[in-house]
Image 1 (cartoon, chains in turn red, green):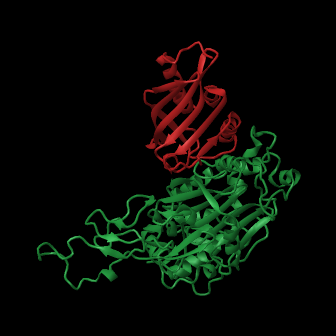
Image 2: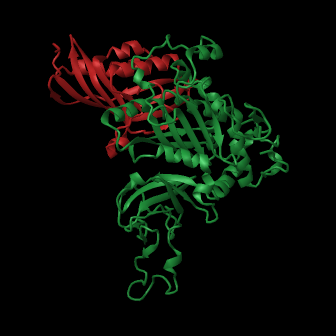
Image 3: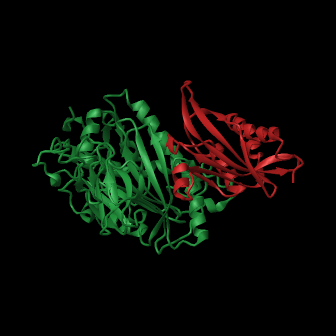
Length: 159
Length: 417
């Protein structure tokens, strides 16, 4: 359990903001550190969500799979050369349940190519389950509900 | 003008870049290929199990509705009102007893027949349609529909050969294999690639690129060119099956072929080996079976991840890949979880497929200004087009182009096929 109460909004904001900033900076080790030891990470097209279908674009039902995806991104995958910019809206505390906070935040991700052309890559909603580990907050479950499910080009870096 | 003179080589080992960029070629493809005597994967019977269930889909860039009628039979028709050309059904999926255009409320039955027209006789004897207006000839344009084990195919051409003849025995066997048990849809994914649709159609037939572009495959021994495998085409080489057998090579053989630097299974070790572990499900040892049906359907098994893809052209410079992820009705929960995990391998974010989007985009981008240039297709040799029992080959691309040229009416005299 954490010593930080979820009513400490700044602690929640710090976690949510760090999430986007670390992806944009390409600091994936630190980014993985935002997740609890036992965690999940899913990117689910809104189309599937609305039809009640389980298949995700990214389906990490454990920390091991999440680490494998990041490992592959760094060591094996080839993708469009770009930088990301996350714009994350203020998180909304939906409720608390068994020592976990349910938090939602809207996001937009812009991609910029090597020649400086920017396009809107994705919008959607984060649906997070946040827990305390020691004196920090961590993501237990992160669901990226993807509005832009007609993925432009390809999806390599996490949203 | 597109003519038979366009081909630099009679065996389709050179394809002019122009064919990926020419608006005239695109229009002729829609007319002679997509609306021509070819068959297209529409949907799965499992997606419209109940009477009145419908799904919107595409044949080329033509919008199509496929639905199950009150009689339980599947009907498909062009989703375009006979009156003003509006989309009749705007929703992508649902259940209905009829389809009514919102614009003037012309109403069609589940068989596509025109049922009713508001104010057909006008108001108080004035206005409306002439008495001679023929409702019977103003239905929605119907597709012929045929099915293989619940995989629904349609064609807009009355003169298309029967589906089984069109596909040929090897492809029919692969479709039957994938659908040998009732399937369950696990989800959809969509990808918009800024490239001509034919670059994607070629990519699915290109065995040569797989383990070179998709480094993840080699790194984890999921799929290597040293495996027993090859390419099998139909009699006319328009379709192709790329196949490989599981565990048919060794790490030692692979290391020799790729050079130790490329086979790095110890360098990047998976925390979750289930991501790539193949669980054999059938008597045959295939862990890779990618069946490309001309022009725009792909039936895919990569390890235990199963899917059908539709290649949907969106103009000369863009293509949508619409993929339906599959499992089987009788999958135990654990197997379903395995398939959902292995869905990480495929699709727009796939560990062994995301590169395809980038590869064909950079071809499209760099080839556009090269109006006189041509691509080289010679892996596995030039000359007569035939099956290969090895993997370093792109011969099926030449098969694709040979049938393409035939349908577009630009086959050169003395073509080698």
